[in-house]
Length: 157
Length: 333
Image (cartoon, rainbow over all chains, first blue to last red; front, side, top):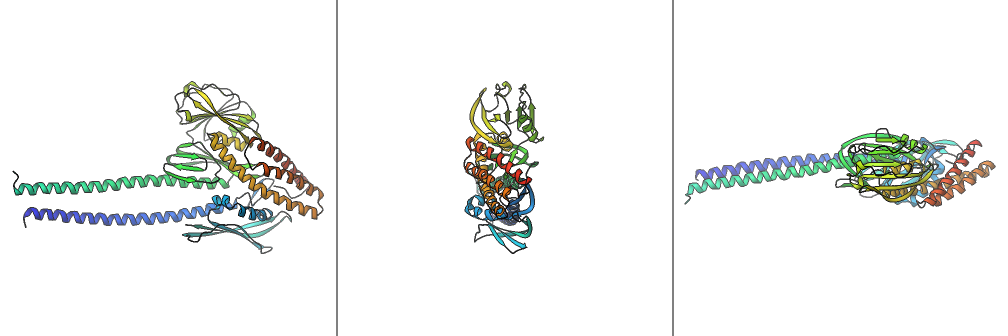
Protein backbone atom coordinates (compact mmCIF):
# COMPACT_ATOMS: atom_id res chain seq x y z
CA UNK A 1 0.00 0.00 0.00
CA UNK A 2 1.35 3.42 -0.88
CA UNK A 3 1.91 6.17 1.72
CA UNK A 4 -0.77 8.45 0.24
CA UNK A 5 -3.34 5.65 0.37
CA UNK A 6 -2.45 5.01 4.02
CA UNK A 7 -2.89 8.77 4.73
CA UNK A 8 -6.35 8.80 3.09
CA UNK A 9 -7.28 5.69 5.04
CA UNK A 10 -6.17 7.40 8.27
CA UNK A 11 -8.21 10.53 7.43
CA UNK A 12 -11.31 8.41 6.70
CA UNK A 13 -10.84 6.54 10.00
CA UNK A 14 -10.47 9.83 11.91
CA UNK A 15 -13.58 11.25 10.20
CA UNK A 16 -15.49 8.04 10.92
CA UNK A 17 -14.61 8.18 14.62
CA UNK A 18 -15.40 11.91 14.63
CA UNK A 19 -18.86 11.38 13.15
CA UNK A 20 -19.51 8.44 15.47
CA UNK A 21 -18.70 10.72 18.43
CA UNK A 22 -20.98 13.43 17.01
CA UNK A 23 -23.83 10.93 16.56
CA UNK A 24 -23.37 9.63 20.13
CA UNK A 25 -23.34 13.22 21.41
CA UNK A 26 -26.43 14.06 19.38
CA UNK A 27 -28.33 10.99 20.65
CA UNK A 28 -27.44 11.96 24.24
CA UNK A 29 -28.54 15.58 23.62
CA UNK A 30 -31.87 14.47 22.08
CA UNK A 31 -32.50 12.16 25.07
CA UNK A 32 -31.84 15.01 27.52
CA UNK A 33 -34.07 17.38 25.55
CA UNK A 34 -36.82 14.73 25.37
CA UNK A 35 -36.77 14.15 29.11
CA UNK A 36 -36.82 17.93 29.68
CA UNK A 37 -39.84 18.27 27.39
CA UNK A 38 -41.62 15.45 29.24
CA UNK A 39 -40.86 17.16 32.55
CA UNK A 40 -42.12 20.49 31.23
CA UNK A 41 -45.29 18.88 29.84
CA UNK A 42 -45.95 17.31 33.24
CA UNK A 43 -45.34 20.66 34.93
CA UNK A 44 -47.67 22.38 32.45
CA UNK A 45 -50.39 19.79 33.07
CA UNK A 46 -50.05 20.34 36.83
CA UNK A 47 -50.21 24.10 36.32
CA UNK A 48 -53.33 23.76 34.18
CA UNK A 49 -54.88 21.45 36.76
CA UNK A 50 -54.29 24.04 39.51
CA UNK A 51 -55.69 26.71 37.16
CA UNK A 52 -58.88 24.71 36.56
CA UNK A 53 -59.28 24.10 40.31
CA UNK A 54 -58.86 27.84 40.94
CA UNK A 55 -61.43 28.69 38.28
CA UNK A 56 -64.00 26.35 39.83
CA UNK A 57 -63.44 27.73 43.32
CA UNK A 58 -64.16 31.25 42.06
CA UNK A 59 -67.03 30.57 39.64
CA UNK A 60 -69.73 33.21 40.26
CA UNK A 61 -72.18 30.47 39.25
CA UNK A 62 -71.66 28.63 42.57
CA UNK A 63 -69.71 30.90 44.90
CA UNK A 64 -71.40 32.28 48.03
CA UNK A 65 -71.83 36.02 48.21
CA UNK A 66 -73.47 38.41 50.61
CA UNK A 67 -74.43 41.78 49.13
CA UNK A 68 -71.91 41.11 46.33
CA UNK A 69 -69.13 40.36 48.83
CA UNK A 70 -67.62 37.02 47.92
CA UNK A 71 -67.08 34.40 50.67
CA UNK A 72 -64.01 32.26 50.02
CA UNK A 73 -64.19 28.45 50.00
CA UNK A 74 -67.97 28.56 50.21
CA UNK A 75 -70.52 27.13 47.81
CA UNK A 76 -74.15 28.20 47.73
CA UNK A 77 -76.37 25.09 47.58
CA UNK A 78 -79.24 26.87 45.80
CA UNK A 79 -76.84 28.15 43.13
CA UNK A 80 -75.28 24.71 42.92
CA UNK A 81 -78.64 23.02 42.24
CA UNK A 82 -79.31 25.40 39.33
CA UNK A 83 -75.72 25.48 38.08
CA UNK A 84 -75.69 21.69 37.81
CA UNK A 85 -78.27 21.67 35.01
CA UNK A 86 -77.20 24.96 33.40
CA UNK A 87 -73.57 23.89 33.15
CA UNK A 88 -74.62 20.59 31.60
CA UNK A 89 -76.79 22.40 29.04
CA UNK A 90 -73.88 24.71 28.17
CA UNK A 91 -71.12 22.13 28.30
CA UNK A 92 -69.30 23.55 25.26
CA UNK A 93 -69.18 27.02 26.81
CA UNK A 94 -67.72 25.67 30.04
CA UNK A 95 -65.26 23.41 28.21
CA UNK A 96 -63.26 26.56 27.40
CA UNK A 97 -62.86 27.14 31.15
CA UNK A 98 -62.76 23.65 32.60
CA UNK A 99 -61.39 21.57 29.68
CA UNK A 100 -61.42 17.79 30.22
CA UNK A 101 -62.35 17.45 33.85
CA UNK A 102 -64.87 16.09 36.29
CA UNK A 103 -66.11 18.35 39.07
CA UNK A 104 -68.15 16.88 41.89
CA UNK A 105 -69.14 17.97 45.39
CA UNK A 106 -69.82 15.57 48.26
CA UNK A 107 -71.53 16.77 51.39
CA UNK A 108 -69.93 15.37 54.55
CA UNK A 109 -72.13 17.10 57.12
CA UNK A 110 -75.09 17.23 57.84
CA UNK A 111 -76.27 14.94 55.01
CA UNK A 112 -74.43 12.93 52.40
CA UNK A 113 -75.69 14.67 49.28
CA UNK A 114 -73.67 14.57 46.07
CA UNK A 115 -73.60 16.91 43.09
CA UNK A 116 -71.86 16.54 39.77
CA UNK A 117 -71.23 20.00 38.44
CA UNK A 118 -69.33 19.28 35.24
CA UNK A 119 -68.09 16.15 33.54
CA UNK A 120 -66.22 15.93 30.27
CA UNK A 121 -63.83 13.02 30.22
CA UNK A 122 -61.54 11.41 27.69
CA UNK A 123 -60.59 7.75 27.47
CA UNK A 124 -57.00 8.01 26.27
CA UNK A 125 -55.62 10.50 28.76
CA UNK A 126 -51.88 10.80 29.43
CA UNK A 127 -52.06 12.27 32.91
CA UNK A 128 -54.69 12.70 35.57
CA UNK A 129 -54.68 14.96 38.62
CA UNK A 130 -57.16 14.88 41.46
CA UNK A 131 -57.57 17.89 43.73
CA UNK A 132 -59.71 17.74 46.87
CA UNK A 133 -60.74 21.02 48.45
CA UNK A 134 -62.61 21.22 51.76
CA UNK A 135 -65.49 23.65 51.40
CA UNK A 136 -68.34 25.15 53.31
CA UNK A 137 -71.79 24.43 51.84
CA UNK A 138 -74.23 27.23 52.56
CA UNK A 139 -77.97 26.77 52.27
CA UNK A 140 -79.51 30.27 51.95
CA UNK A 141 -83.04 28.89 52.49
CA UNK A 142 -82.24 27.63 55.99
CA UNK A 143 -79.23 29.93 56.48
CA UNK A 144 -77.18 26.98 57.68
CA UNK A 145 -73.66 25.95 56.77
CA UNK A 146 -72.62 22.38 56.05
CA UNK A 147 -69.29 20.88 55.23
CA UNK A 148 -68.21 19.15 52.05
CA UNK A 149 -65.41 18.20 49.72
CA UNK A 150 -65.00 19.59 46.23
CA UNK A 151 -63.25 17.02 44.01
CA UNK A 152 -61.72 18.20 40.79
CA UNK A 153 -60.35 15.53 38.46
CA UNK A 154 -58.43 16.93 35.49
CA UNK A 155 -57.40 14.83 32.51
CA UNK A 156 -54.79 15.66 29.89
CA UNK A 157 -53.99 14.02 26.55
CA UNK B 1 0.83 17.02 -17.28
CA UNK B 2 0.09 16.02 -13.60
CA UNK B 3 2.09 13.02 -12.43
CA UNK B 4 0.68 10.29 -10.10
CA UNK B 5 2.04 11.84 -6.88
CA UNK B 6 0.64 15.24 -7.82
CA UNK B 7 -2.79 13.66 -8.42
CA UNK B 8 -2.70 11.94 -4.99
CA UNK B 9 -1.90 15.26 -3.21
CA UNK B 10 -4.72 17.06 -5.08
CA UNK B 11 -7.19 14.26 -4.26
CA UNK B 12 -6.19 14.51 -0.60
CA UNK B 13 -6.96 18.24 -0.59
CA UNK B 14 -10.31 17.76 -2.36
CA UNK B 15 -11.20 15.04 0.15
CA UNK B 16 -10.32 17.30 3.13
CA UNK B 17 -12.31 20.15 1.54
CA UNK B 18 -15.42 17.97 1.07
CA UNK B 19 -15.16 16.52 4.58
CA UNK B 20 -14.61 20.01 6.06
CA UNK B 21 -17.60 21.40 4.13
CA UNK B 22 -19.75 18.49 5.35
CA UNK B 23 -18.74 19.16 8.97
CA UNK B 24 -19.39 22.92 8.66
CA UNK B 25 -22.76 22.22 6.99
CA UNK B 26 -23.71 19.79 9.74
CA UNK B 27 -22.95 22.28 12.51
CA UNK B 28 -24.62 25.14 10.62
CA UNK B 29 -27.83 23.09 10.31
CA UNK B 30 -27.67 22.16 14.02
CA UNK B 31 -27.16 25.81 15.06
CA UNK B 32 -29.99 27.08 12.81
CA UNK B 33 -32.37 24.38 14.09
CA UNK B 34 -31.37 25.08 17.69
CA UNK B 35 -31.91 28.82 17.21
CA UNK B 36 -35.42 28.27 15.84
CA UNK B 37 -36.23 25.78 18.65
CA UNK B 38 -34.97 28.23 21.25
CA UNK B 39 -37.02 31.10 19.78
CA UNK B 40 -40.17 28.96 19.68
CA UNK B 41 -39.47 27.83 23.24
CA UNK B 42 -39.19 31.46 24.44
CA UNK B 43 -42.45 32.32 22.68
CA UNK B 44 -44.13 29.28 24.23
CA UNK B 45 -42.83 30.33 27.67
CA UNK B 46 -44.33 33.81 27.26
CA UNK B 47 -47.60 32.29 26.04
CA UNK B 48 -47.59 29.96 29.06
CA UNK B 49 -47.12 33.01 31.31
CA UNK B 50 -50.02 34.70 29.52
CA UNK B 51 -52.20 31.64 30.16
CA UNK B 52 -51.25 31.69 33.84
CA UNK B 53 -52.01 35.43 33.98
CA UNK B 54 -55.39 34.93 32.31
CA UNK B 55 -56.26 32.13 34.76
CA UNK B 56 -54.94 33.94 37.82
CA UNK B 57 -56.57 37.21 36.95
CA UNK B 58 -59.85 35.48 36.21
CA UNK B 59 -60.18 34.46 39.82
CA UNK B 60 -59.04 37.59 41.64
CA UNK B 61 -60.88 40.88 41.44
CA UNK B 62 -59.68 44.45 41.86
CA UNK B 63 -56.00 43.61 41.52
CA UNK B 64 -53.16 45.19 39.56
CA UNK B 65 -49.89 43.45 38.75
CA UNK B 66 -46.71 44.28 36.88
CA UNK B 67 -45.23 41.12 35.36
CA UNK B 68 -41.74 40.73 33.88
CA UNK B 69 -41.64 38.71 30.66
CA UNK B 70 -38.96 38.08 27.98
CA UNK B 71 -38.92 40.98 25.52
CA UNK B 72 -41.66 40.10 23.02
CA UNK B 73 -44.46 41.34 20.81
CA UNK B 74 -47.79 39.91 21.94
CA UNK B 75 -50.70 40.19 19.55
CA UNK B 76 -54.17 40.17 21.07
CA UNK B 77 -57.22 39.59 18.98
CA UNK B 78 -60.81 38.55 19.57
CA UNK B 79 -60.37 35.24 21.44
CA UNK B 80 -56.75 34.77 20.38
CA UNK B 81 -53.37 35.58 21.91
CA UNK B 82 -50.32 35.12 19.64
CA UNK B 83 -46.58 35.53 20.04
CA UNK B 84 -44.80 35.09 16.71
CA UNK B 85 -46.09 31.85 15.23
CA UNK B 86 -47.28 30.46 18.56
CA UNK B 87 -50.88 31.22 19.44
CA UNK B 88 -53.65 30.14 21.77
CA UNK B 89 -57.36 30.43 21.06
CA UNK B 90 -60.12 30.92 23.59
CA UNK B 91 -63.83 30.58 22.98
CA UNK B 92 -65.03 33.11 25.53
CA UNK B 93 -62.05 35.22 26.51
CA UNK B 94 -62.66 38.38 28.53
CA UNK B 95 -59.42 40.19 27.83
CA UNK B 96 -59.29 43.88 26.97
CA UNK B 97 -55.88 44.72 25.53
CA UNK B 98 -54.27 46.74 22.73
CA UNK B 99 -53.79 44.79 19.48
CA UNK B 100 -50.02 44.77 20.10
CA UNK B 101 -48.30 44.61 23.49
CA UNK B 102 -44.58 45.37 23.23
CA UNK B 103 -41.78 45.18 25.75
CA UNK B 104 -40.56 43.11 28.67
CA UNK B 105 -43.25 44.12 31.15
CA UNK B 106 -47.00 43.58 31.31
CA UNK B 107 -49.40 45.59 33.41
CA UNK B 108 -52.51 43.61 34.31
CA UNK B 109 -55.66 44.74 36.05
CA UNK B 110 -58.90 42.95 36.91
CA UNK B 111 -62.28 44.35 37.78
CA UNK B 112 -65.55 42.56 38.48
CA UNK B 113 -68.29 42.87 35.87
CA UNK B 114 -71.23 43.35 38.24
CA UNK B 115 -74.73 44.24 37.02
CA UNK B 116 -75.39 44.35 39.99
CA UNK B 117 -74.19 40.82 40.95
CA UNK B 118 -70.76 39.62 39.80
CA UNK B 119 -71.10 37.79 36.49
CA UNK B 120 -67.43 37.62 35.49
CA UNK B 121 -64.04 39.19 36.02
CA UNK B 122 -62.81 41.49 33.29
CA UNK B 123 -59.10 41.29 32.62
CA UNK B 124 -57.10 44.21 31.20
CA UNK B 125 -53.53 43.82 29.95
CA UNK B 126 -51.33 46.50 28.48
CA UNK B 127 -47.71 47.60 28.14
CA UNK B 128 -46.06 50.36 30.21
CA UNK B 129 -44.57 51.57 26.90
CA UNK B 130 -48.02 52.56 25.62
CA UNK B 131 -49.03 56.18 26.33
CA UNK B 132 -52.53 57.05 27.57
CA UNK B 133 -53.67 60.67 27.40
CA UNK B 134 -56.88 61.36 29.34
CA UNK B 135 -58.47 64.74 28.63
CA UNK B 136 -61.54 65.90 30.52
CA UNK B 137 -62.80 67.81 33.53
CA UNK B 138 -65.75 65.64 34.53
CA UNK B 139 -66.02 63.41 37.62
CA UNK B 140 -66.04 60.39 35.30
CA UNK B 141 -62.72 61.47 33.75
CA UNK B 142 -61.17 61.77 37.22
CA UNK B 143 -62.62 58.38 38.21
CA UNK B 144 -61.21 56.67 35.11
CA UNK B 145 -57.81 58.26 35.75
CA UNK B 146 -57.90 57.02 39.37
CA UNK B 147 -58.96 53.52 38.28
CA UNK B 148 -56.05 53.08 35.88
CA UNK B 149 -52.83 51.70 37.46
CA UNK B 150 -50.11 54.22 38.30
CA UNK B 151 -47.55 51.90 36.62
CA UNK B 152 -48.96 52.96 33.23
CA UNK B 153 -47.60 55.84 31.18
CA UNK B 154 -50.75 57.93 31.66
CA UNK B 155 -51.35 61.65 31.59
CA UNK B 156 -54.40 63.45 32.89
CA UNK B 157 -55.28 66.90 31.54
CA UNK B 158 -58.34 68.99 32.32
CA UNK B 159 -58.07 70.77 28.97
CA UNK B 160 -56.28 69.99 25.69
CA UNK B 161 -52.52 70.28 26.27
CA UNK B 162 -49.70 70.66 23.74
CA UNK B 163 -49.00 67.07 22.68
CA UNK B 164 -45.38 66.09 22.03
CA UNK B 165 -44.12 62.89 20.46
CA UNK B 166 -42.34 60.93 23.24
CA UNK B 167 -41.53 57.96 20.96
CA UNK B 168 -44.12 55.60 22.36
CA UNK B 169 -45.09 52.79 20.00
CA UNK B 170 -48.80 53.52 20.51
CA UNK B 171 -50.81 56.46 21.85
CA UNK B 172 -54.38 56.23 23.12
CA UNK B 173 -56.46 59.38 23.71
CA UNK B 174 -59.36 59.15 26.15
CA UNK B 175 -61.57 62.18 25.58
CA UNK B 176 -64.46 63.24 27.78
CA UNK B 177 -65.38 66.27 25.70
CA UNK B 178 -65.34 66.95 21.98
CA UNK B 179 -62.85 65.30 19.65
CA UNK B 180 -59.62 67.34 19.61
CA UNK B 181 -57.68 68.63 16.60
CA UNK B 182 -55.13 66.06 15.49
CA UNK B 183 -51.77 66.86 17.19
CA UNK B 184 -49.15 67.96 14.64
CA UNK B 185 -46.34 66.19 16.55
CA UNK B 186 -47.96 62.80 15.94
CA UNK B 187 -48.50 63.14 12.18
CA UNK B 188 -45.53 60.93 11.34
CA UNK B 189 -46.69 58.00 13.45
CA UNK B 190 -48.32 55.01 11.68
CA UNK B 191 -52.11 55.41 11.40
CA UNK B 192 -53.01 52.35 13.47
CA UNK B 193 -50.76 53.45 16.38
CA UNK B 194 -52.70 56.62 17.26
CA UNK B 195 -56.26 55.98 18.40
CA UNK B 196 -58.86 57.78 20.48
CA UNK B 197 -62.17 57.23 22.20
CA UNK B 198 -64.69 59.92 22.94
CA UNK B 199 -66.93 59.13 25.90
CA UNK B 200 -70.45 60.41 26.28
CA UNK B 201 -72.24 59.24 29.42
CA UNK B 202 -71.85 58.61 33.13
CA UNK B 203 -70.42 55.85 35.31
CA UNK B 204 -73.55 53.72 34.77
CA UNK B 205 -73.89 53.76 30.99
CA UNK B 206 -73.21 55.73 27.86
CA UNK B 207 -71.68 55.57 24.41
CA UNK B 208 -68.11 55.42 23.14
CA UNK B 209 -66.95 56.74 19.79
CA UNK B 210 -63.84 55.03 18.42
CA UNK B 211 -61.41 57.10 16.31
CA UNK B 212 -58.17 56.32 14.53
CA UNK B 213 -55.47 58.48 12.94
CA UNK B 214 -55.68 58.91 9.17
CA UNK B 215 -52.89 61.09 7.83
CA UNK B 216 -53.20 64.31 9.79
CA UNK B 217 -56.79 63.94 10.96
CA UNK B 218 -59.12 61.59 12.83
CA UNK B 219 -61.20 58.90 11.13
CA UNK B 220 -64.37 57.64 12.93
CA UNK B 221 -64.33 53.85 13.40
CA UNK B 222 -67.76 53.36 14.97
CA UNK B 223 -69.82 53.83 18.10
CA UNK B 224 -70.54 51.31 20.81
CA UNK B 225 -72.36 51.43 24.15
CA UNK B 226 -70.90 50.68 27.60
CA UNK B 227 -72.40 49.58 30.88
CA UNK B 228 -70.60 50.42 34.10
CA UNK B 229 -67.12 51.76 34.69
CA UNK B 230 -65.59 48.31 34.07
CA UNK B 231 -66.70 48.08 30.45
CA UNK B 232 -65.71 51.73 29.87
CA UNK B 233 -62.18 50.93 31.11
CA UNK B 234 -62.26 47.97 28.72
CA UNK B 235 -62.76 50.40 25.83
CA UNK B 236 -59.74 52.42 27.04
CA UNK B 237 -57.48 49.35 26.87
CA UNK B 238 -58.86 47.71 23.71
CA UNK B 239 -57.71 49.85 20.79
CA UNK B 240 -60.26 48.63 18.25
CA UNK B 241 -64.05 48.57 18.35
CA UNK B 242 -63.99 44.91 17.20
CA UNK B 243 -61.97 43.69 20.19
CA UNK B 244 -64.10 45.77 22.60
CA UNK B 245 -67.40 44.48 21.21
CA UNK B 246 -66.14 40.88 21.05
CA UNK B 247 -65.24 41.02 24.75
CA UNK B 248 -68.53 42.66 25.66
CA UNK B 249 -70.45 39.97 23.76
CA UNK B 250 -68.53 37.33 25.75
CA UNK B 251 -69.27 39.19 29.00
CA UNK B 252 -72.97 39.30 28.08
CA UNK B 253 -72.98 35.52 27.35
CA UNK B 254 -71.61 34.90 30.83
CA UNK B 255 -74.07 37.38 32.36
CA UNK B 256 -76.88 35.46 30.65
CA UNK B 257 -75.78 32.15 32.24
CA UNK B 258 -75.20 33.64 35.69
CA UNK B 259 -78.56 35.47 35.58
CA UNK B 260 -80.33 32.19 34.85
CA UNK B 261 -78.78 30.75 38.03
CA UNK B 262 -79.80 33.77 40.13
CA UNK B 263 -83.29 33.55 38.62
CA UNK B 264 -83.74 29.92 39.70
CA UNK B 265 -82.18 30.64 43.10
CA UNK B 266 -84.61 33.54 43.70
CA UNK B 267 -87.57 31.33 42.69
CA UNK B 268 -86.55 28.82 45.38
CA UNK B 269 -86.09 31.60 47.94
CA UNK B 270 -89.57 32.87 47.10
CA UNK B 271 -91.11 29.41 47.51
CA UNK B 272 -89.43 29.16 50.92
CA UNK B 273 -90.63 32.63 51.93
CA UNK B 274 -94.23 31.82 50.93
CA UNK B 275 -94.15 28.57 52.94
CA UNK B 276 -92.74 30.41 55.96
CA UNK B 277 -95.35 33.20 55.61
CA UNK B 278 -92.66 35.84 55.11
CA UNK B 279 -94.82 38.09 52.94
CA UNK B 280 -92.41 41.01 52.70
CA UNK B 281 -89.59 38.74 51.66
CA UNK B 282 -91.70 36.95 49.04
CA UNK B 283 -92.72 40.35 47.64
CA UNK B 284 -89.07 41.43 47.30
CA UNK B 285 -88.19 38.13 45.64
CA UNK B 286 -91.15 38.43 43.29
CA UNK B 287 -90.05 41.96 42.28
CA UNK B 288 -86.47 40.76 41.94
CA UNK B 289 -87.62 37.94 39.64
CA UNK B 290 -89.13 40.49 37.24
CA UNK B 291 -85.81 42.34 37.12
CA UNK B 292 -83.79 39.14 36.74
CA UNK B 293 -86.04 38.03 33.89
CA UNK B 294 -85.53 41.30 32.07
CA UNK B 295 -81.74 41.14 32.61
CA UNK B 296 -81.80 37.55 31.33
CA UNK B 297 -83.70 38.55 28.17
CA UNK B 298 -81.58 41.65 27.56
CA UNK B 299 -78.24 39.88 28.07
CA UNK B 300 -78.83 37.73 25.01
CA UNK B 301 -77.47 40.53 22.80
CA UNK B 302 -74.99 43.33 23.32
CA UNK B 303 -76.57 46.57 22.09
CA UNK B 304 -77.62 49.99 23.41
CA UNK B 305 -81.30 49.11 23.93
CA UNK B 306 -80.40 46.06 26.01
CA UNK B 307 -77.86 48.04 28.01
CA UNK B 308 -80.60 50.54 28.91
CA UNK B 309 -82.85 47.67 30.05
CA UNK B 310 -80.06 46.00 32.06
CA UNK B 311 -78.99 49.27 33.66
CA UNK B 312 -82.54 50.09 34.80
CA UNK B 313 -83.20 46.52 36.00
CA UNK B 314 -79.86 46.40 37.84
CA UNK B 315 -80.75 49.58 39.73
CA UNK B 316 -84.18 48.21 40.71
CA UNK B 317 -82.70 44.83 41.65
CA UNK B 318 -80.14 46.55 43.84
CA UNK B 319 -83.06 48.30 45.59
CA UNK B 320 -84.84 44.97 46.15
CA UNK B 321 -81.64 43.49 47.58
CA UNK B 322 -81.40 46.43 49.99
CA UNK B 323 -85.05 45.95 50.99
CA UNK B 324 -84.35 42.25 51.61
CA UNK B 325 -81.47 43.25 53.86
CA UNK B 326 -83.62 45.74 55.80
CA UNK B 327 -86.30 43.07 56.42
CA UNK B 328 -83.68 40.42 57.32
CA UNK B 329 -84.59 38.26 54.33
CA UNK B 330 -81.97 36.13 52.60
CA UNK B 331 -80.20 38.39 50.12
CA UNK B 332 -80.86 38.00 46.40
CA UNK B 333 -77.17 38.29 45.54
